[in-house]
Amino acid sequence: MDFIKWFCNNWYANCFTIITVVLSGIISLAISAVYYRKGNRNNLKMAVIHPIIRLLEEAYTRQNYNILCDISKEYSVRYMSKNEAKKLTLLLSAYKEVSSYNDIYVSANILFSYFEYTLKKNNIEVKPVPFEHEGEIIYYDYPPDLHYLSNDLERLLNKIEPELQPDEVKEAVIELYEHYCKEYYTSEKIEYFEDYTIKEVMSKSKIRQKWNEKFDDAQKAKEQFLSLKIVRDN
Image (cartoon, rainbow, N blue to C red; front, side, top):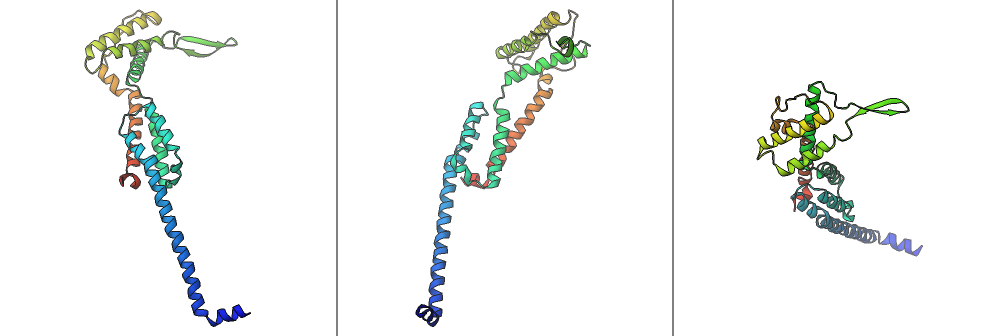
């Protein structure tokens, strides 16, 4: 009772003291929270943002993609905002799609696809080999050794650059086409690269267009990440 009486008798002074103590505590907590967040964001910049910026200045490779994945698993990533984390996820996804790109391999696939297109244009069935299961044909496929054509095309493109020696490449590719066509389909004369030049085949192929779209997506994801405020402030 004496405490209550004393408190009431000194009501204004005691209330002022209590408010002062509470506000002091709140301010201290707020300052601590600000410094805590600032420290976490600085760690985020050092451990995640800076390494990614440097990585994005280099070429897209599978090795760099693996490094990017490792960076994205850093502890300080948890201090990213939702928008920053979303942009990082989009970057990882788009980067993965282009990290395995190999121009020689893609170009060889394009030339193989054009070989198939030309055969079909000449009314030749490119998948004449039946595959059976329990006496029933379930699908048709290429002749078993036709895949060697892709390997031969890769070896050719490693020796001769289409951009520098288009005529030499065209002659060598036609020679391969004629060999495999005679071996697995027909010995009749077939004209290649009449409708499109070899340069047009390389650039207009759906395979090339698909890869171009992947690179466009990767560039867009890269630009969105680099436009984040935490990145621009570096």
